[in-house]
Length: 307
Image (cartoon, rainbow, N blue to C red):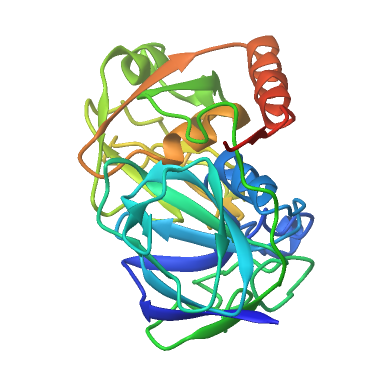
């Protein structure tokens, strides 16, 4: 069995897979990779399936020493990754040998990168997932971010050196949303205000929710009972500044939801850094479904051999 040793942990490096599904009624958040599109490309480049846990690297990446021999795939944001000082672009796989060092020099494009290894990364299985839930302290590597000195087991063996045929990060600042489920509670111009001007991502954003700053949305009159919160829900608190709920969100909430980010554009949202802008545009259910089908088709494209 090969291992990886964390020399420097980076800003926030956690073990994530696709998340916990089917336990929302028990108050268990999904968690998992915020950019499932990039995660899947990393897994494929490492020769792994969808259930395989990988490292989610946020903004300032770790320094990792390899113990043994394995393979890895890198996808998502360009955070200045290198292998033994040689640049490692996102969307490519690498053979790794004992003593090799993976490092990240700093963000160039995007916010989150995914590093998947042959055989997956050692992680605790909780409720069908190995994703790290930082709020509950379960899953992943002891339920916490990685620290200097941590050693995690990975699989052995070398995959063919391949690259993705398309970019592995969904870039841009336009995020498509569908109205509701509580848009009827807001004044008639609320959706127009949401989609009229860009919002700025605030530094208080985290894996629970993306907090935005921009034109305030008028408050919905009255109040609602707490209810289930879908992934990508755009809540409007009394301040009028929207909060987009992400994978580590609570499963219920009491702020009304004006609109919901479509599934295909959650990866776009996951790559927006604090200080960057986000523009919302309204679409219908047919468009949302077609966007998800198109994204799924991209993820099925054959990998390309590196020459």
